[in-house]
Image 1 (cartoon, rainbow, N blue to C red):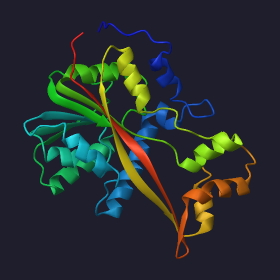
Image 2 (cartoon, one colour):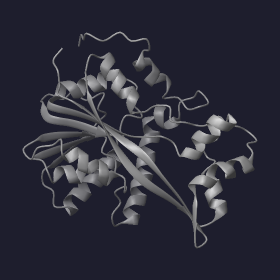
Image 3 (tube, helix red, strand yellow):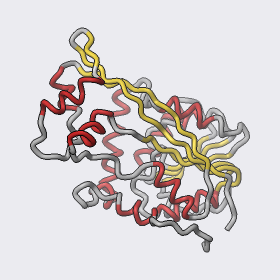
Image 4 (tube, rainbow, N blue to C red):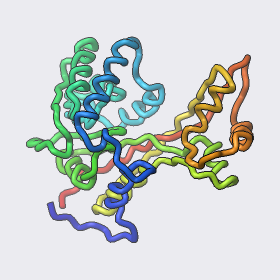
Length: 284
């Protein structure tokens, strides 16, 4: 497909591909090998089945609310990379038909079983990679949330969303900032922090680079991390520090303004965000 892209000082498509690498400059096995990715999802889905009950992430409900405002009851919708169904079932309950596309057979099996439990008869499944699949028909809406982490041919995948959607294409991603103590340690102590390498803004810039002017809605998501002990609080909140031989006292001082002690437990409230990037498909 020939497009009229927008020249920028930075090539965000190349940046996306470069930032697929870990901080040590390598690609993880899940990025490289499909069988590793399938193994991850098989194990993950088995754990979800054992948990039972409501397995939807708590933050997903806020995103669901905003996502549903963009959908119509008579829409035929495609969801890319549904995972364990954070958005699958709420969307299926509010549209005419939902087609889920996922590269993992374990994901497809899990969602198929759950659809039966939810008595949803308007959901179908395609076991394939979005970047490989040949969609022969158009749908009213194509959307995907947090499903882009393995897609190296990001420009082709976004253009396919643009091509297959007739009314709206929607890209969703949870975003930062990181917990504020990490930001403080970086700014005030010069610590090297494992900040996220790819974020929603890269996708919006890629769309712009491709000649697509997309809207973006930012959703605030309040969160509280709770820890049963001081040791667990510290252990969980140093995991993103890359600086070797960091000073524990400096970490404790950075955490102090944000942490609340309640009856021997520790709470760390903070706000992260999600972005819904959406556009009316254009023809190149």
